[in-house]
Image 1 (cartoon, helix red, strand yellow):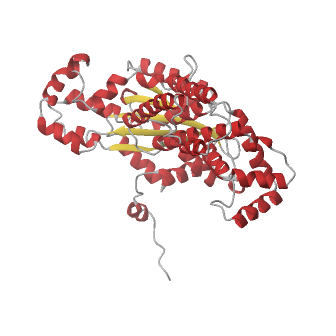
Image 2 (cartoon, one colour; image 1 turned 120 degrees about the vertical axis):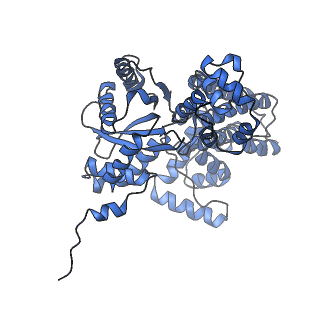
Image 3 (cartoon, helix red, strand yellow; image 1 turned 30 degrees about the vertical axis):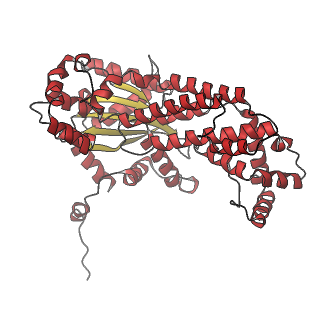
Length: 445
């Protein structure tokens, strides 16, 4: 079935007008480097194809040249035209984005050989958001929280006794959560649960002769409440960025919206207005003995704001192209590339097409444009629609890989792993009738 799906992808790829690639690399249970290559392309009808193009295993080094070689093999296997490659989304690692030896640099050289323009290089948005989260410097909070959580969860007896203790108290939760650094949403959930069970956690660790005076500290509790709220906001933002098939315009809108929210929070927290920070607001209503640590919390928000500005500055490089794609009716004709100006003049004065754009999805709206009249605008739409906003599909597939290739199934070959992953993440259906027709039936005697 995997081979049948690969054949279908080869046939679909020949019909693509433009395509983009998403690259990500990780190690499997046997420490073999596995490179995932996803393809996202559009045909002339604006039908989007988003599929696993290849899983390439690397036994040795994983330099930019090594990764580029695997990309070239995939391009050849699918008979893809380099001239149709519009963008490459990566995790931003040096071996990928290095200006001289990175895979993007090698791809640019390949494009130069064929006299094609360089593809747009995009760093995955979700990964950048996770790196921004690491700038939240309230280590005094996380250190104490993780110390208490590990004290309870890392010892089976403590864990069982804590569960029984919470069950007897009839509280909202009967357990505390572990924090896992690689799971980006983990910290917010751990902090929220820990704050809600703070009195119970203090009583339990005290009963086990573990002194944690910070748990009763008024200023520390302010920091915990504030970090819980900010992390929850970041978690919600992360969830918005997840999902397959998202357009880069949608991703950019979420990033821009969060930056606006961050500006709003800075102004409100400065005035000690906690209307969008429920945990902090509830604590404020309790009238703690210690005043809200305004300066420390403001520093946290301003650091986060600066980190976002740095990490997402690349998104502003192609702002005009995104705006033209997102809403061609609102752009200023005089500021766009001359090849679109005459077509925009026609489009912006056509009420029926304007209504169509408002009532349909973006890709369906572009598909309805007559190609004779709006050739360049359609072409632009075909390109932008291929961009991966993130490598979420790669990260999701690596999660599937860990379920498919684990210690007691570690001898699974790369070929079989590739087919299993393709079946797990594909949007296509295997042609079962064709597969059955290729098999010879054994009649009973």
